[in-house]
Image (cartoon, rainbow, N blue to C red; front, top):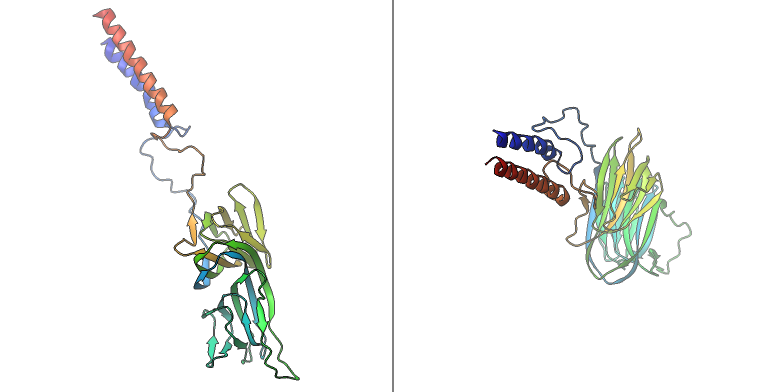
Amino acid sequence: MKRRRIISVIAALLTPLWLLGSSGTLAAPNTAPNTNATAAAAGPTISLQGEFPLTVEAGEYTLTYLVLDFAPGAEIPLHYHGGPALVVGMEGTLTLRPEAGGEHTLMPGDVVNEKAGVRHVMINTTNANARIMAVVLLPKGAQLTNVVDTGATNPNPAPGPTVPFQGDYPLTVAAGDYSLVNLVLDFAPGAEIPLHYHGGPVVIVGKDGTLTLRSEAGAVHTVGPKDVMNEQALAKHVMTNNSNTDATVLAGVLLPRGAALTTIAASQPAGMPSTGGGNIDNLPFWAFIFGLLLVGIGVISHRSHSTG
């Protein structure tokens, strides 16, 4: 009878410790889901996107993001770029005329991949404004745009486009296969990308509204219209629209082939202990439990020998 009483006392001591686990708080067993818990914030939407696979030589580059506005009749005459360019149509219609002949139109959502050194004309032949966005991987020392001198003179040259948004990110790039990625991200009020990282360096340019970026270390930055933010590959951060209005950012990424564009990081910060009842990863806790159990067994054995 006394042995059973001692075992009952030990069990009573161990039960709350088992439920406590390594979390530091007492967890009730078989707890029903909390229906009042706040739902996870919605993420942003991608309204425009383009991708340009390419092979890059090792060296120093600048990842450049820019938006170009073409008024009716505006053009860039015969020209070429110093690095590969990924162009995505945003508004209106533009006409591209390669030097080799032919003609292409660029409308909202259309994607054109331009190799370095390829000559072409870009012109707005319509009566409405047109807008495009471009990401360029520019080798150090190269010119972004080079107008070709054809020897012809034009007394009334057409006006060129204007550049309302631009951002630059100097990089040292290892040789390999990559993709240039061009994105427009729209955040409704409260929308968020939780703690995450990107597989390659990112240049971000604010377009509309204000977004808040919080690094894993706790540093906070805001990105408003025309603000530029450069994000290193694998740097963890949170991006949230804490305002009551929509917010939009433009993003250019140099993504190594096979890498994920965005990876949501584990919700548990690195270096923090695991939580949850009964977690066997907390060895000190279970060493204590095992020691307490041995003490109980010793007490039982001693009582048995004393009364036996």
